[in-house]
Amino acid sequence: MSITKERKTELIQEYRRGDVDTGSPEVQIAVLSSRISQLTEHLKGHVKDHAGRRGLLMLVSKRRKLLNYLESHAKSRYTEVIGRLGLRK
Image 1 (tube, rainbow, N blue to C red):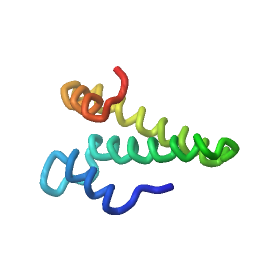
Image 2: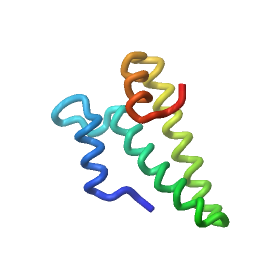
Image 3: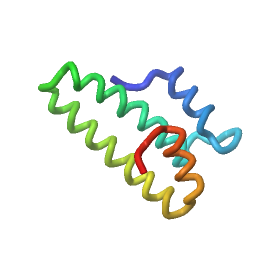
Image 4: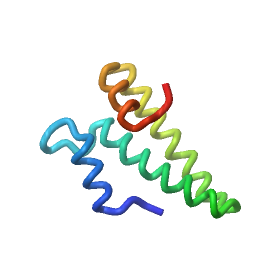
């Protein structure tokens, strides 16, 4: 249920801010969003996977914290990221 190495590299290439950027909030949010969507699809078919559901809640919480950080420090980057990822707000 984890993200593949190729998919993670694609996301980093798409959302990075510089040539060697791999850890900016934008990249982290994009990777987390991909993992969240995969886990959501998994849980639709495996309703009783409570450990997976707990993991999903932790990922959503981590993404929310990163979004809050980005919103408070760089509003324009925040709006750009949620627009590109199709998140609410």
